[in-house]
Length: 365
Image 1 (cartoon, rainbow, N blue to C red):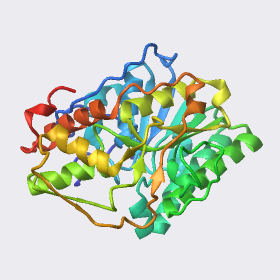
Image 2: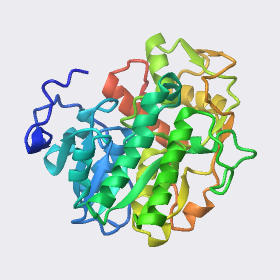
Image 3: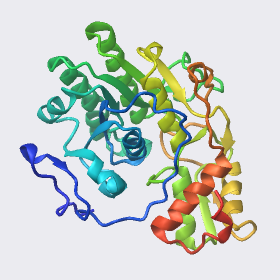
């Protein structure tokens, strides 16, 4: 994507209040979460790294609605500034990299909370480019933690980790106290970030909470299995769907609004500091079941040829779904089931890409 007309000027040519019209207006379907209170976010100074990305942008929008003073730090490498078009006038946007000490120190100094979402968030990409994965996920996280200590910031860090830290678990569902044996570079660097965070918590008093995301999906996503299904079906006009593996892999799909709520909830729980939490629904879905749900929502049952490849990409695991007992104990309860969430994603995909294969059956979420 050409960002030449979107680069940021102002404070050290990096900080700006974004103005409407800098980026093309994308008509987004926004799913509003059912949060019963604002958790006390009004007036809080919050930094969201990777805030123009999938989860980061959804989180940023919610924080704005809750009255927080939000700064987004993003290098737009794998994210999209258009994801923030409807909150441009309500946030500070900093075009910068989490590996840049000068930029990070300037941004963490006066924050109350830091939601650290910036990352290389792809197992296949981590296999292809292990150095970039290491630099972004491990070094980037360390840069933020060092900046907090150097600037004497009081910010609490809510860290976006991943279920990839478990690798292939000995059994399922997976609890937070299971062995941590990642089998992908991505899992290794995410776990490294956790270790750095907990070390800074115990040695320097930096409040740190780790959220181990399972399969998050929903509006604004640009990769992962559900999006890949829709993209492949759009390219074949619904006639063919190639699926990696044999379809028996089990996953735990959590809608993005529920993942956002987990962030908002845990950030305000003092007992969560120094802890790691599975962010999931606790309900397994096989890939075959997901295929069936997708085709049913699209009205394509019996019309699409399904081809299972028999093997997946390097670093993939067979079965990975969560025990969320620990998360429930702090008051979390997922609100969006997979059927409802999938239909919301389908409607957003249609609005974003204009795919004609999506039928009227998707209108009701």
